[in-house]
Image (cartoon, rainbow, N blue to C red; front, side, top):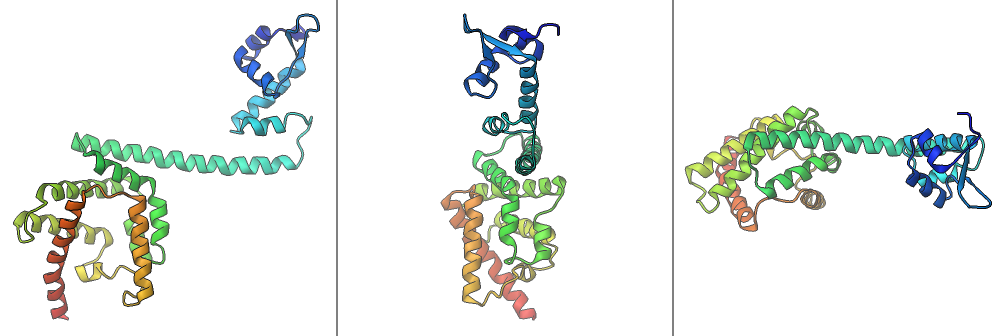
Length: 270
């Protein structure tokens, strides 16, 4: 560029930054050009172009305008800038993790919708909340559930997670369909048989007694019982139940009726 100075329109054209953005930077005291003493028009110089690239570079790094403004005055960057960069690095890593979680959740949700064509709103929201809070759920489980079981409950591959969610979705649909039927109804029995068979498959246990023994705490200890109840409450807070109170009460009774005879049978064998 031959000119030593530029009007705002010339500067905008040369840099690819809009006039509106240049106005904004001026108003925020981030990039303030000189002013024509007679007309008051903004006058940009080549030095302003370096400053603009400085702004654009720090924006590229994801820094806020407040942080950028703070670093605009010095002509050099000293060691204090390292702290700013490290903070920004931590933020970007966290943002990337959040983006990765969201992308996987989208893929898993698309998979469900493609297979089901239509999913109840409450069920889908519950599944999405579970996807969103997987790491929190895993952290809460530590010290409560055995480590080897935790690894199986929170698989690393999206394919395995999709299979679990598909089976869980099917279970909720069957709960809604069969709610109100007696515990000895064949369809209720089959629903619970299929569900517990799948849970035992996921946790790699061979019996309902083993399934009940997945906790790493002594269940006979009153304090541990309270810890488990707190853990369950935290999980329920993170992941809302997709079934109604009526359906939940019915399901709890069905589980009690289903597990009782099987538990007595296994106790008798021992």
